Image 1 (tube, rainbow, N blue to C red):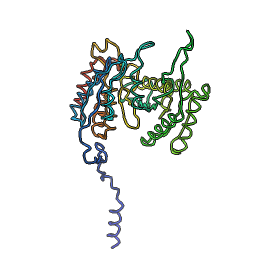
Image 2 (cartoon, rainbow, N blue to C red; image 1 turned 30 degrees about the vertical axis):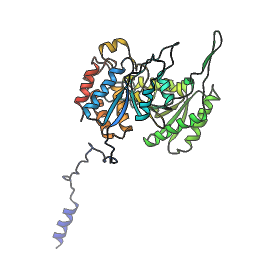
Image 3 (cartoon, rainbow, N blue to C red; image 1 turned 90 degrees about the vertical axis):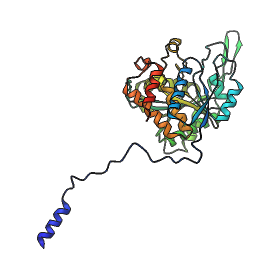
Image 4 (cartoon, rainbow, N blue to C red; image 1 turned 45 degrees about the vertical axis):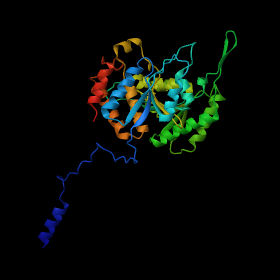
Length: 371
């Protein structure tokens, strides 16, 4: 009896080295349950724009068609030298709620006003969002960069309030309001909360512009109190630029007034891999316009257009953001995964990424890698 008990005890305590757990599949997350009718194709207003715009928007059209994505485009010709955006274009965006656009060339100095700015004001697209992050396989000076720059889009230096006081003296007004500052701060903290981001940093120059940027900071501080789980910090814009180029991985979500946001977003884009790969968009309460995230180079040079070697990655990733906005997450995931695979593989890259591929060659590679 004692021998049998000992044998049973030995069997029970024997190490189970041969036992293995079934691996957990990682290819698919918990399923997305759509509402009835969510698969209905959605109309999207498409503005090819100037320069490389037609090349990169055509790239998006090809990939969407290859994926059989539930979107179709209403295309309109708009160019930066027009006096205004045609009324039918505005009507289309208001009807569809969503727009995808290439860059619109803005005259430097004299000439017509920026149609990019006009569109944001017309549709009250008060929040610009640019996501600057390292892409696997694309070497950069800094690693672990994943910055989201959220920029107030409707006032500040871009208010366009300029006049000549007397010959040789021009006055340009910077407008900052509590209403606009509070709503951009709320958007930044809400974005951080919904995307599991840990820190929001307000960028300012309140040490010099004590009233204007002081009001912006005051608004950010008030909103920050409502989000105790998110760390809130502040940084002066000149120090911010220095910190960006020396230690960009310290930043998470950045919220800025209009002009600073343009500078910070383009700097962060250059650090993380270049303006040709950074997605972005502009959003308001009712409408959203998706475009290349960083404005520098979004129209491109004439030679690039002639050779058809524009980088379509930024707008492809922006269109993935658009697909998520439209509640088509699986299509967004497929597109983003295919783009990242092409970048990581390194065989098809445009000149700005160290290669010599054409726009079409990159598009073909992305389509070939669609899951």
